[in-house]
Length: 143
Image (cartoon, rainbow, N blue to C red; front, top):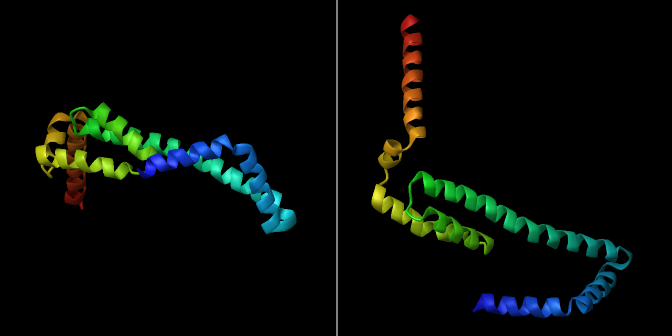
């Protein structure tokens, strides 16, 4: 209900944007005097940055979330990533992760063995860990 109200208010503001701009200019001059135009430009730049930054950050977050969904082999990872993108734009992205995390822990458990048995990256890291442990053991034996 609140989102619907926000859309109606935004539509009203956009329909009367010319009057809103002149009102904001008058208010800025009234409150800040000769620096009113500078404060109005600063407010405009801030709002413009936020409105372009939110979708950009949401896209980056959903890409990483989608990559994580693929790594843990979550069924329907693309759909989960799309839902996460919508939720991240609405600034509730973390809430979208809760059902996915519950599903992963319910089907895989907390030890991560499913990831390590199916993922080539994990197998390579296991070999790398074994090689680095061997090398450190040999160095400690030599001393």
